[in-house]
Image 1 (cartoon, rainbow, N blue to C red):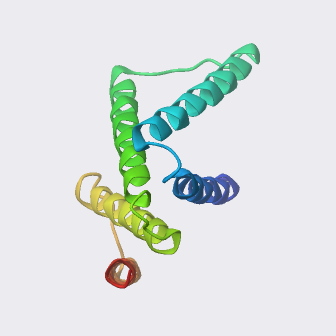
Image 2: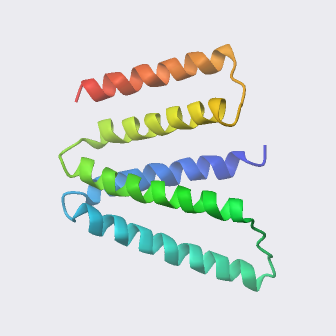
Length: 142
């Protein structure tokens, strides 16, 4: 379970990421906000990469890995722009963030099952149903 602490920290970071997009929206154009966010992420990633390089870490990659990273970057960029836009329309954080996160989970679950052929148990299906129900309730009760 060496993945638990990084996973919890990643969830915390994604929560803060969505929160700060909400707080910034309405005070900045969605495109400018997304570009600033991506520029900061680029600088942070570049510093981390340079630090690891000075430690002698070798970075293996394949064209397939690079291609999927590019696609992930494309979709996170679009998600940032759309999040800034949605939150600039007075969408409450208490509705928008759970809908984004729930939709993210549902998309990941469906792609994992149907594209990556990962298996789900009855408990997983129950949890998915609860996520969908919760997202629908939040989205409809704005």
